[in-house]
Structure formats: structure tokens, C-alpha cells
Image (tube, rainbow, N blue to C red):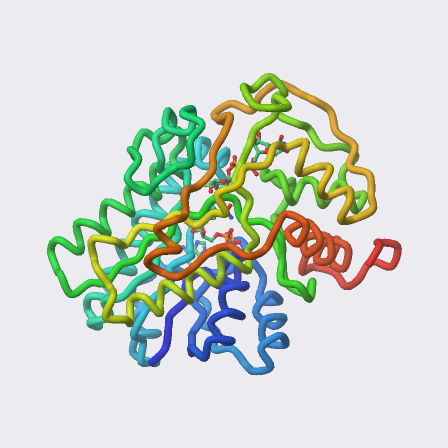
Length: 352
Ligand code: NAD
Ligand code: UFG
């Protein structure tokens, strides 16, 4: 029995493959490579020491997904495939709803057709109501959701609702929804990592590209928030810890403990770090300067967002174990060894 892992050529999926292999699970990767390269799969293959079953295709292509279900004995799906850039989703809402929401519906239809009823879904902290984080308390799974600020967040919220309704219609479905906070870092070998196309939107890849000399300076979006140093605070989580949460979710689905009423989990560390703290930590880890300028706030940003992940600890037996130093160290190892991501080989002048 295999796990179909959609979107596994991407950042979080590729790291999850390593943890799945370590735990002895077998899998097939399904990805249209719209935001990734096959090279990530080759590198994962080297890490785990075996070939990976890879099928290129789009989750919206029902015929292609059916072919994959015909070819392999698929028992679970881990569903990472989706578009994820918040700003882009505001400009291209139809593409986001089509890819993320319609794509998930098409995938679920085929799963149902083949009687495959176990799924782990990548959701996001962006589903929480905008007002909740202003409470400056850790977010809990029971906090209000749905008052989202952009089509990306709305697409994740819609999918959560669809999964919930699917379960109501068919109790055989076993569904786990993981709400990720801010994934950063890379596998400790530095051979796989985050490879954003074009100019990074997110803080950590922007910091790492500045440290390696690809960007002149980092723009810090606002220093007038109601936080200790005035910059935004987020719950950064090491991508390997996040990957491990998926293994724990699959274990949970398989166990007698599985309870459909407890199937949404926050996946964060419970600690919030400001933008300036992140810059300092990265400078220490890389031994490089990260020049920055304070610029106006980015629209749609909130001041503080961090997780209460105690439910994941209690039910899944999962908790984050890697600290900020490890996040920055591993990110730097990946960035300095692969300044152009998966496109080029090593850069000699970058510090190893
Ligand atoms: P990513 O872009 O690196 O990976 C997503 C993968 O999905 C890519 O390889 C892409 O080619 C593939 N894909 C996209 N649309 C597809 C389609 N229609 N058919 C087949 N493949 C398709 O992103 P990531 O950071 O690894 O994120 C994985 C998942 O986690 C996404 O669903 C994302 O929304 C969610 N998530 C990410 C973050 C984050 O900050 N990285 C935070 C919360 C949630
Ligand atoms: N920031 C900067 N400069 C930058 C980029 C970011 O100062 O160049 C700041 C932001 O203002 C924010 C913090 O760094 O205070 C983190 O910003 P990110 O863009 O890295 O992350 P967000 O919290 O805005 O959003 C991310 C992902 C979403 C995901 C969400 C919660 O982009 O997809 O985390 O998981 F849903």
C-alpha cells in the first residue's frame, strides 16, 4: 500500500518524503512541476538511497489521476499540491480557486471512486480570522476561521469546509488537516531546501538571498507594530519538524486513537520571533551581514501570529524539536551550497 503525495516536488513535500522513507512508508509522487523542479526528487532519492516513483501531472486532470490510481495500490493521500503566494492570489483569484479548490475537488472525486478515503491536507494559519491574532495570544484550533484577507487563505478555508462536508456525507473518510505556521530551514545536509521562483515573498528566503549576496538589502515591512521591537512576530517552524508532523498524522489515521472530531492541528512551535530577531539570528548562523531598511507596512500583514500546538502534542504525539539556531543554520547551508536553488551547482565563494 502506498501514499500518493501530491505536490511533493515542492519545498515541504520534498522534506516530507525523506521523513516518510525514514519511517518505512512507501509513496508515489504526483506533481505538475508548476512551482518546482524534478531535481528536488533526484536529491531526495540520493538522501533516502533509493529510486522514487514519480508521475508528472495536474490534480485537475481527472484522467491522469485515475491512471495513477489504476497503476498503484494507493491507500492514503498527502495533499500538498497548490499555489501559495498570497500577493499573487489577490491578482489572480480565479487561478487560485481553480488550482486549489477545484483541483482538490477533482482529486477527492478520484479518491472516492477508488475507495481511497484517508487524506492529510496542507492548510495554513491564514485561515484564522484576521482579528484573532490581534489578541496576542497563541491561536487555538477552535478559534474563529473564515474571515480571510486574500484568495489564497480563502481557498484553504474553503477546502477545509469541503473536507468537513465530505466527512459528513461519508463517515468512512479519515481526514487530518494540518494548519502550518511559517515553515523555514532545510534538510540538514543542505541538499534540499526552499527554491522560490523570482523574488521571494517570504521573509526567510529573502534574508538568505541577502546574506548570500543575491539581494542588496531586506525591506523590513514596518517597525511600528505593537510588538517589543515594532516589527511583525511569527511562529517559524523548521521544515523537518513540519515534515515529521505528516508522518505522525499518517500514524494517527492508522491507529485506534483516530477520532474524526479531532482532526485539525496547528503545526507551529508556540514561540514568536520578530523580523529583527530573525535577521540577527541569521547573521549569527551565517557569519554574514544582512543589510536592511525599514519600509512601510505590507498591506494585509498582521502584527503577531503564533500557534498553540498542544493538541498536536497530546493527540499526534508531535512537537517541534528544532530551535531558531537550527532553522537559520540549515537554511544557510542550503542557500550557500545552492545560491541558485536547484538550477545550478555549488557557488565557490559562499561560506559553507
Ligand atoms: P511549493 O510551491 O514548494 O510546493 C507545491 C507543489 O505543488 C509544487 O511542487 C507545485 O509544482 C505543485 N502543484 C501546484 N499546483 C499543482 C497542481 N494543480 N497539480 C499538481 N501539482 C501542483 O509549496 P510548499 O511551500 O511546499 O507548500 C506545500 C503546501 O503547503 C501548499 O498547499 C501550501 O499552500 C501549503 N502551505 C505552505 C506554507 C508555506 O509558507 N510554505 C504555509 C502554509 C501552508
Ligand atoms: N517580512 C518583511 N520583509 C520581507 C518579507 C516579510 O519584513 O521581505 C515580514 C512580514 O511583514 C511578516 C514576517 O516578515 O511580519 C513574515 O512574513 P512572511 O511573508 O514570511 O510570512 P507570512 O506570515 O506573511 O505568511 C506566511 C506564508 C503564508 C502562510 C502563512 C501562515 O506566506 O502562505 O505564513 O502559515 F499561510
